[in-house]
Length: 225
Image 1 (cartoon, rainbow, N blue to C red):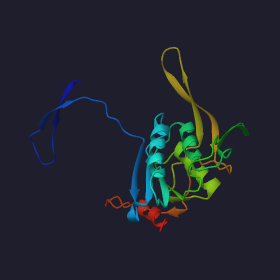
Image 2: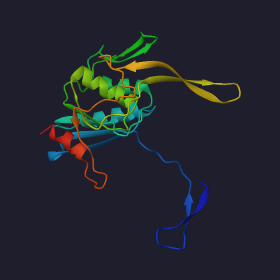
Image 3: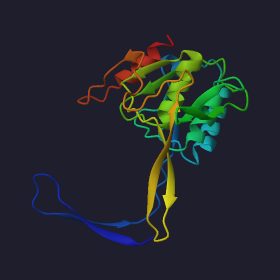
Image 4: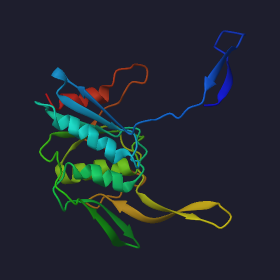
């Protein structure tokens, strides 16, 4: 609710433009749904991060998809998604898998210390799925993409993912400072450790930064035709 005055200088101008802005909260959704492709029959669900609110936003998107008739499939887009809560990735992966399916396992000291499995049958188990990835897809994004490919042979489209395969635990000190300590590796259901390597796409497609055409998304849409 407070005001801030900004002086904006545009290229080629010597005189700044002075504007007053009112500070406010900016709500950035973590899940965005749109319908693409011929006759808008493909659901394109972009997950920008795996946060505390992601599951609720995902549920709303899925209810919308399930309410549409004639949907030919779903594209889950985790491009430039840096990750977040591991549990959120497991919950979303659950919607495509049978109950009791391994999504990710954790390993420390050469031993498996935890295996996270689905706790329910997914609502989209029989849905044609494609996953979009790129160099900005990291951590929880790679967990989701790896689980889909290992369990369902889902096609990954785009660029090689970032390659973060470690689990961190935050610790706080009495003076208020803190540190994140790496405590384990996470592995895909087939035992792949992506750290430093990333996930290679099944269909490699580069986007041209000089145009607004999303060739990666277009390639994913073609898999439904």
